[in-house]
Image (cartoon, rainbow, N blue to C red):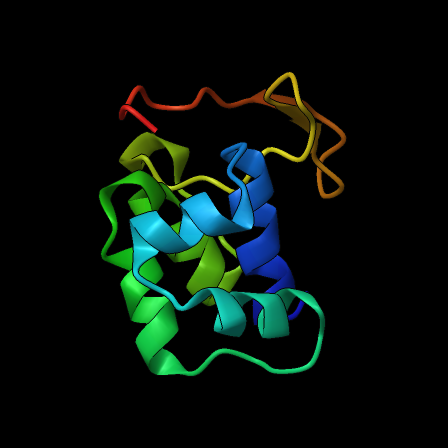
Length: 103
């Protein structure tokens, strides 16, 4: 999965609009639209902006390495509205809950 697709997956998992995601992360809306539209791939600065945002810290390991460590609070985004995802790797259902951050 491309980095731009991962960013979109994170935004969708958190139930955020593009505008709200940009307000929280500090990424320019035009840049996010270019990433999500497949017109550009983010550089290091936008990735750091995402991983240094409290709400998105839990996705850092997955974003950078495609790995997770739930015991350390490092998860992958949930792709369904109910917060669950069937893992393609193990066929197990994983449940993730959004943190209450006022967003």
